[in-house]
Amino acid sequence: MQSLYVHFPFCEAKCHYCDFYSLGQERTRKGDHDRFEKALNCEIKKSGSLLAPKLDTLFFGGGTPSMTSYDSMARAIEPLWKTTQIDSRTEWTLEANPSSIHLETFRLYRAYGINRISMGIQALRSDLLQSLGRVHSRETALQALENVFSAGFNNVSVDLLCGAPEQSEYDLEEAMKILTQFPITHLSCYLLTLPPHHKMYSQLPKEEVQLAHLLFIHRWMTDHGFEHYEISNFARPGKKARHNLKYWQGESYLGLGPSAHSYNAKSCQRWKNISSLHKYAHLLEKGESIIEWTETLNLDQLELEKWMLALRLNDGFPIDWLKTPAQKAKAYALELEGLLEKHPEISERKRLTPTGFALSDQVIRALA
Picture 1: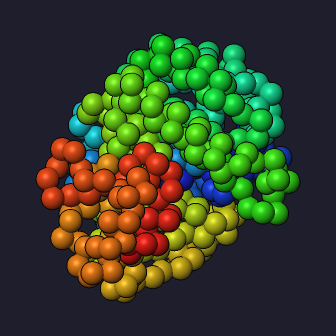
Picture 2 (picture 1 turned 30 degrees about the vertical axis):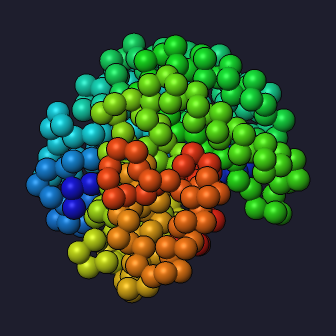
């Protein structure tokens, strides 16, 4: 496997809308960071043989990996270099939140080989950040961006949320004006989605407002030289998130750390590590399996995933995937609705329109 994901489970505070496994400081006990470091070191020794001699992409996600000190991070992954290597062409991404970005630490990360930062800004209105449960302010976010570029990083992605309660297009426009003054190379914009039982669910804007937010971001980013290459992602030329493209193109990847997923494209097998730091560490200490579940995808699942992944991307899908009269009729109807179109640059392919991206679940159900 040429791509590796490492999950760091620690956060300063757990955001109420986040579904990823993480531990806020209020749930972190003394010694947890040391225990994670030793457990990850052990897992790498056990699983490193699954990796190719050289990595194409390496992604440190979480949680908030930037809460882990440089020294601890280096010790945790030290066994990695005995089985695989990186070079200047490897895309090595570190996720970070503004409150955990410090200039000197990020200079160390850059010297170590990390060459891409993905920063969770989410919004630039301090009261909105507070309602979302974020621990940083507008000022902290902007200072963090200054620090990242000052530390020598020139491949920087930022995350934003849209469709949040009491958020307006004016808020989004102001955020985009400020963010695009920095030399960012990538933007991920996610629609805030909450389950019906969530305390803020009733406050979410109506669907037409959420759609307007998504289309506004599309117009702004494409007008400023970014390609809308995936449902939620925009990139400068040559700066697509290569690691995430591995997922979206159905390629193999190895995941390490509690709750991490892996996929072997050759065997069509997927597996997931246990979502508990303490069980993960305990099982590794005992020499037992940390895999929570494994599945081998059948033909129907592979067909569904083929459509789901292709429709996520701007390249779309080959027209000859429309094999049955029913599929062809549905595709024609989707084109009339403005959700699907002929690809303007790649012949014999169709892709989602910007509105289609926003309503992709509807298109997938129709075509898959």
